[in-house]
Length: 228
Length: 214
Image (cartoon, rainbow over all chains, first blue to last red; front, side, top):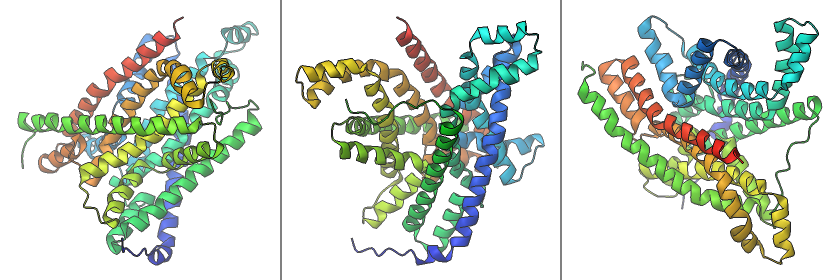
């Protein structure tokens, strides 16, 4: 192997990489926020008494969870304009990511809602609380606390999954890497550095979520490092 | 300009075998690697556990797309002429080994601790404890999440289209380029993925429920 690694031009393109990383972070954060809201809405509908509503949510969940994100992205970005709905690459990307995360978040939040003891809800009713305060204070907050670890790992997958956006947009981190490699013909160095940036971002998010877990939800996570 | 006809539909259906083949290759390769990673993760030696944990952490911390690029271009640097098929098989094998390793680690540790303690009391060595006591019991728990991961793997093979592997999504893109019928083409592509993934998802849930039954 007589390949000489060159990293100097990556340092020269640091501004572009930084902009790409920031857009990835922004897109991921927006997706987490809206995706969680969609998930709460979906979980509320899925645990409601209306059969039709439960059915619609079920179809949404199964359709999203059993097809690849890339194909969903193409359907939204390339397919929907045929129906008169036109998006910029960035908004198509955000929409696809939110719709995708919404399905997974619905299932996670629903599991949390179902773990809330029935007695709590009945006690709320007995105290004369209206359905909305019951949902807000008795159901959703404890439910989110229960499923926080599962949500957190789903959120990490959002950050990593956002690299798929590079197939339609030219702005986020992976797309920046693709541009740089076609200018410099140094693909390995670029993807190596960009892989490191993604790793740092996902470890950073993991640390933030672990911090929230420690501060807000004082329940010890299962020990992972035990030999058998 | 061509129209989307039965010929194009057949092209998509034929391309599906490459998706299936890549999924199976990745699952077998990832399974072998994953078994090693899972065992290393519960090894009595601390530094072996640490290496396996770092391996999982790195591979689960970078996007699959970047991993595929690294394998594809990294092999070129090593002087290996690599075709998209080999690159995809290696990339997905690595990806699968990290995820299956983590899933199976959880299954090995889910076996009641008393089983392991009893095996230690009987002076069984680590390989004996693993093969005779813990792994057979863990295997039962491991089936549903492994089937679930297969769904994830199958969906993720769509990313191989980006490095030029001619599977279902790649074929869909090519057909869309000549027919300009994205709704029909990608609708059908999505339908094929759904037809493959949904039964597997249902199977995984069914197996899990059977496991929970006393």
